[in-house]
Image (cartoon, rainbow, N blue to C red):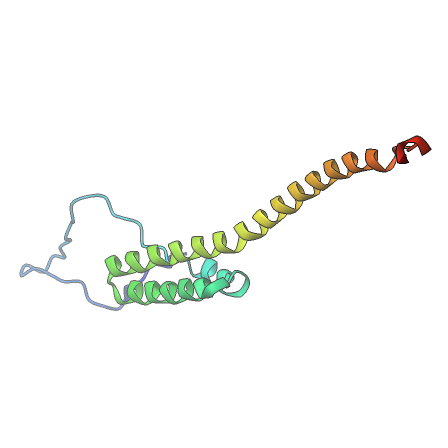
Length: 134
């Protein structure tokens, strides 16, 4: 299934030379793949990872990339697709890193408190004699 844009209309006549033979124009170099717009990733970033509206910005740039790809401006589509990808990565990092840091702080705090509790438990098990109060 070909999803590349713009689609060619099969009913359009092919250009012909004066002698009536069809000709083909070859462009040098390997064909580049069509630019990616990251639309599905941007939709998920908008719905689930929309901290500081980075997911929404990614969605806007993805839609612009798709529009430019349909219009035939592949360089602009590639630029907008790259920006959408960057915003998606920032949205994912901005949403995933703070909870991981909080989890790390809770774990290290719990470990520190357990060591502190072991040291203070020894204080409460100390028996004092009456001679200690003289």
